[in-house]
Image (cartoon, rainbow, N blue to C red):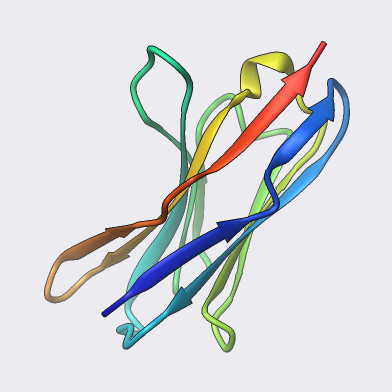
Length: 117
């Protein structure tokens, strides 16, 4: 059974930085996509950034210039470096794993990020 455990969230002032981590455990196909999503109160969950097992990345428009996604395949760990944080970045951040075949999606429990003005 695959489990995703996020860490690194917290309270930070605007302009500050945080680094989120997501540790994946279990039997995981090497062909997969890992991603970070966030969900603010009253809003839909949206993609922050994704990265394939080969290292190709995609970012939400709001994250392109400030956030950086990376992964350590040997450790099955996903990272999100967030810089120049804004109050509107406040949300629960979720780790996501998409296994390509058979197509299966997993979610972490989420970690709260709060940015104060």
